[in-house]
Image (cartoon, rainbow, N blue to C red; front, side, top):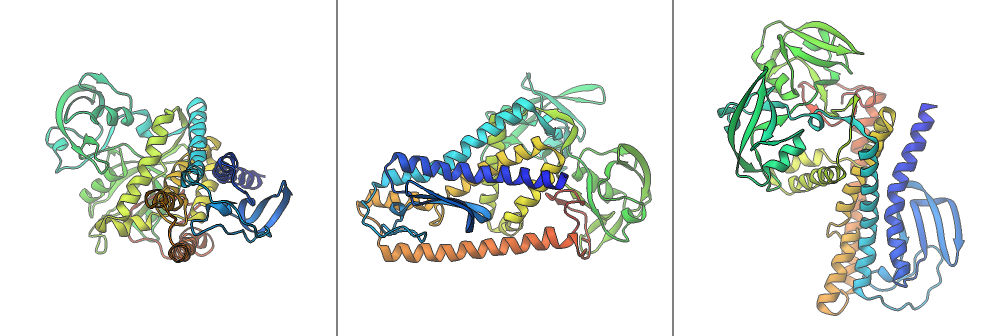
Length: 462
């Protein structure tokens, strides 16, 4: 029954994401007097189809998208669709109307995202540590923050005497200052530290060299490793190592490095019980550091604690993630790693599967994030998405004539082939990374690292 429930919820939430996008195109196109031939959710052969007032409404068998057939939006000239519409002469539409129709899809996604953000705010969702506090999970030892005295486990409670509750508050407080005076609590004491801010990857001023608290949750364990021999299992949470409470995955990695070739105690939590084990970090030639042999899961949600994140913060954080990824893709030293972080339809469905099974509100939050990401991606100036239609329409406004049909057809066909190739590549890679290991467990990773994957029971180690 849980499986059926999960499938139904995924179809409803993902289907709603597609529907609001296409509905935006549909409503504005009707308002602008355009001819609408097809309104489709999904691609391929129809599993349901009807025709009303000359418009075909259908649901395709392939659920990864949808479309509204608008022959007057074709930048190379008016062409009928392949759905049986009669060939007829249609008047050209003003380019500014085409821009409105193109923008309407992403507007639908953003309106839906804001609605979901308010639902999450009103009802609440499982929380991550940085949403509840401003405890420092890691400090880079070569940073100004470390030099001025900030340490792991310190909690920032005020910036320039302005009280803060979590990392969102810290980010906002630092964004307008080139240096900040932090009020910090530690071991029952309190100290005041002044540190400079530096521009981060978004060009926003922030305290450099510090990271928030996160969980050391185990996604998988390397066979034969020290962690494996100690009995650590996927799903465990490592709470302390060598007698020291852990504040982040980075903190654990640094302690493992310090404990090289020594047997040290570790406390893990398994199904609400704390268990003490012993591990012996050993040097790994490939990783060039000491390891215990675990792969982390970075989904830092505490299901026993509910938070009510502000809608604006949810939208901003979701947009920040996709902008950071897009920027990394065009940065040579980051492009390779960024390309590995991109997921396709299979990755989206796996994430939906995991979130729905764990928390319906978490699934709503993920849907909000997905709508923001899709809205931004659709605005990119790529010919086969909404941003491409906007680009062609702007060209027509500037030059007072449409782009050459031959040029447009060449560009559209080239990008269509490229997009299909990327779609197939991502689908293949997602299957290899997320689905195949469920049935055929390959060799485990040689180093512990962080992964944005769901827990091991949903996505085992590669």
